[in-house]
Image 1 (tube, rainbow over the protein chains, first blue to last red):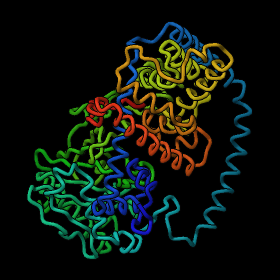
Image 2: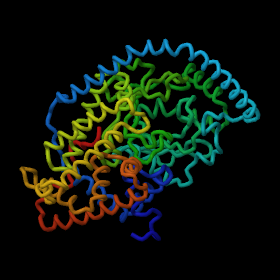
Image 3: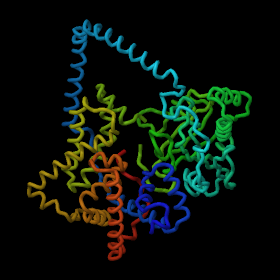
Image 4: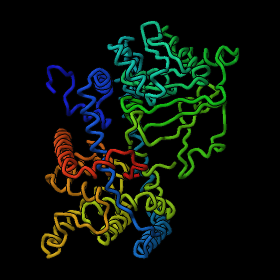
Length: 335
Length: 191
């Protein structure tokens, strides 16, 4: 494979398959893979090697916590408990001097705060986030239409996405790139679908590929469309929140339909700067629901409550369940 | 599901249940880590236990800067290095043969093990950390203290070498190839 004919190196292709490329390169790799049989063969070879290696399983004997560990654990916890019991006396001894230190610390804090206030007085940006305000619209658009289509499709297995409607983001909002046949809608959401208080609400690097099933396409997609329209129209967050509340009140925005869910199994997305492409997962939407009814966030439960709409204007509860494979069928790391 | 890191902090705060949960999550992966590298079940079990003992002893020093998974594998790698040094100075080295022994192990597994043995040790370690422990490139780089690009290039070389070796073996023994490439029911990585 010559690098003249291929926009990505073989090593980069391998890194893409491992979910190790940054979002823009991953989208480029995915787009190229769709068009290049030679690279698809190489990708299949790499996947084949990984598959072969899985034959080497190591069966571990089923045992509980061994005695030696149990003893060490007991001793450790006992020491810790003893330390806790003795610490109040120590606290008493240092209380007097602590007041002196607290006074000094307060003076230093006031001085630092004063300094910070003075130096930031003329700055109108929010220093608490790297993405304080909306970037230019151009930065949220993907320059390669085919790359965005491929990225959107990568959200679900091909058996679903190949017949799904594909939406891509344009200057005026989402537009249909490919008509679908099965009622699913695949698209790449942008950062403004994050919670309104998210530090990455305006992060232009966020690309979230997902495929809504028909119920979600009817009842959740309208929310994505609405938020996007408002963002492109330049509304403030407060205005958007008010408008969404009104939208649900006057039924312009529908409640989640029974069975609404989406696939998020792409290895090429970038959900945010902390989790990157995250793990492949499915999301299920409901009208406001107590998370305990799904056993979400409990120990050993694979279900978590997604914070996307928590404390937001949308009366929607969203549960997430990780799955073990990426949309291309390869095994994924488990959380 | 409570994250490993939250469990570790709970354990630091004195929770036995948190440790038991971490033990349940990582006993098998750690056994697998040592089992694949030493081909000795007893030592694998011992060293997996040693790893947990080290966690208990160092609990107060743990800081949630790295994933617990990476933290545990860092300890495991140190124990493995010590074990290998011991083996080098003992006659056991001769017994822990370079060629895997057919101790009732399925032929396909032996085939994979033999293929892995053909790789250079540093490349093999990177490949194993990626394929079996499912570490990211940056985690591997950090654990092995090598540049990220080195991880990527060595991983690339090792996969190509392995592919070529497995292909040539498959030509000489087509029966092995018959079962190859079939989807595996479950991937056992660091969970």
